[in-house]
Length: 83
Figure 1 (cartoon, rainbow, N blue to C red):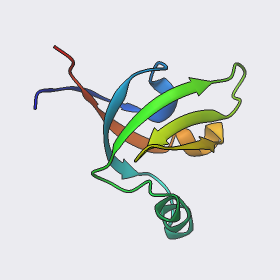
Figure 2: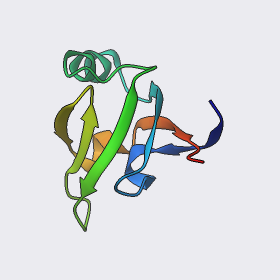
Figure 3: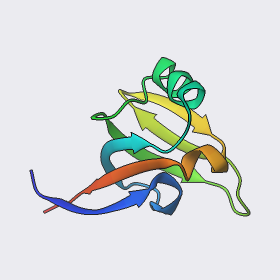
Figure 4: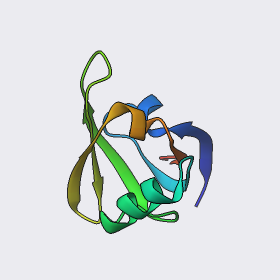
């Protein structure tokens, strides 16, 4: 599967998908995200985001989750290149 560039989740546009590469946060944040199914290697799709650093809505394993902007900018995603 071909890949594009790496971005943080807050930099993605709604509708874009990618593989979660890692989390730039402490063990507490990684543990909290893993309980939501947000772990490295998973496909993640950005559904929407609000202006002015509002929540970011994502989809992982057909489950939608809202994350705060600060958390979203610490999640690194490898973009999937669509043909």
